Length: 150
Image 1 (cartoon, rainbow, N blue to C red):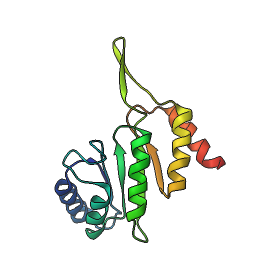
Image 2 (cartoon, rainbow, N blue to C red; image 1 turned 180 degrees about the vertical axis):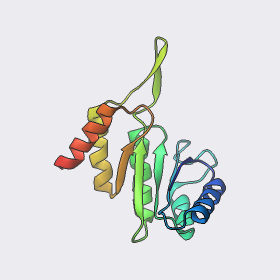
Image 3 (tube, rainbow, N blue to C red; image 1 turned 90 degrees about the horizontal axis):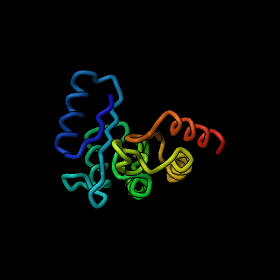
Image 4 (cartoon, helix red, strand yellow; image 1 turned 60 degrees about the horizontal axis):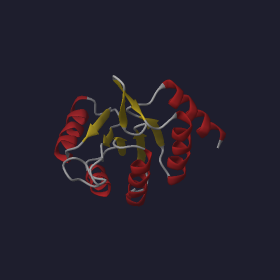
């Protein structure tokens, strides 16, 4: 089960407990959104989130959404430094931040840059790599190709 885009650790823990209650046989993955000074909106840093959720028995912890690849790289480093053996790490960055272009928003990071970012995340020890807001099928294809070719 995926508990995604959390900002409050208490709510994340409640979701984990609920997931374990309704589907105890399924793995539980939790991702938080770190975007304000590399903390969640509620002030939780990646290491604290990881340690707390590991104590709750989750199978994977990570980050999604946020401000883009630069911040996600730093968050991934912090998660990797705090990782206990056996825990999977997840990172799904936005394709940058949206900017207004006429009457629509566009994201600032293209597929090639997200592909390089995927390689960086893999090299940092992230096990599950994806993309979040602003990503397209082209982003996903470029990331998959980059990870497949080394």
